[in-house]
Image: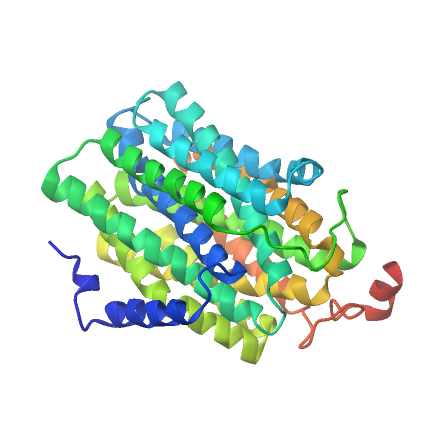
Length: 418
């Protein structure tokens, strides 16, 4: 049975065809195609893990809000420790390291279904998360190194689209596996993780080791002139946790959504992103990071406030889809940094930024899990506060950011700080 979004003649099917045509024109052994492949493989495992998590946790491991919050905090600890990637790069090339991390992500996902207990799910989550967060850190670093500033927003949009294609396929298969074939969690987790490992092995043997354009610093770097990038990254991580942990959990706990229902929501999300993410990349290139992020955070203020008071399952699902679509706007934070950065700082700053992104992520899920037992409304209103803070910071981004003019505040002081 073919997913309706993939039927011939639909907008999603047309978008997939256009992407395939563009890929044929590219050298399949180019850095850009490797980025697309890594992005797709990462999304495949993570989509499998995420789509099944809430139902697996509730049905097999008897999770409540406390356990799900604790699990998500544990999941983010490897992200908090992402800065350690810079030390691994003393002995491994980034391209080698990213493929090893991709394989570890697949292994962690494949093992999840075999351990349907609180402790078992905690352990497989940490294993999966180590691979995922190192892979994401290194992929971001390599993208900003391999891509020119003019081309970066476009290609990063395509990277998100590639991830959406992989996720769309994963969710379509998961929906079929549970709603039609009646397969067990063990089989679905195993297939999702196993395919990711296979892709990592293929990329290891099929692609050359691409040279670095600029030798990267191999020490941790925190620069005063990057402070706005750090702040936006921190708040982005905080608001993302509320979506990932509690928006999905609300759909299951409050509105009784099944695996099939949740999977269909993800299908809608990723089908839309196949078209929207490249369009957002083009928008950022034309109109700049400040305008893109302003639109994102204004939308999120409305969405999180609506989450707090929603009583309709259909309206909640609509908010969930809109919330997910705004994630593609995060391209603008990355391209903003690329424009203001010393090229030698990209790898170490990518590692540090992932740690900053996960400072709140380690603490918030467990803390808000306790608050959830008292007031789910308060949890989402805190998300509104994070979005409002991000909006205020976004207004400090210059129309044309560059080294020496990173913010609208005291650009001469920022330049001297370097």
